Length: 125
Image (cartoon, rainbow, N blue to C red; front, side, top):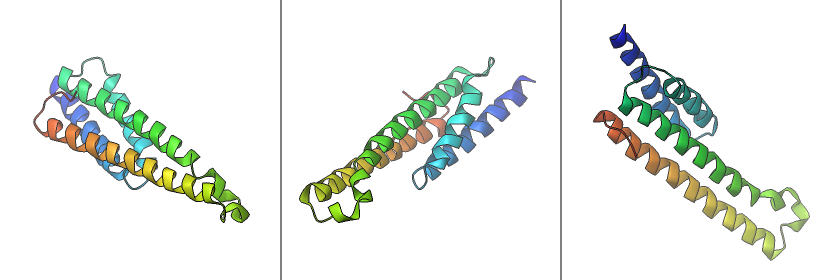
């Protein structure tokens, strides 16, 4: 029974890392990744390293979503087409692109660091 739980937790974590990678392209993958990692984090008999991996994914996805939401706020002035000729709208767009790139790089870094530790069966911190 314990071995089956370990296999199931590893399967959830592998799928969660796959969705975390897909979150680099669409934000929907981040939500799936969060909920799959949450299943492992809430499990009572999960091993410590896999529990830490689940918490790592949950933390990284939440921070990414906050960064992405902050970056999206800078694109609001683009809704008004007649404002596009104003310099401050272009500046907001450039700032939004910079923050979007920062959030994308954060998730890529968290994925690389976490997945490399996962392959070694170690806790990610």
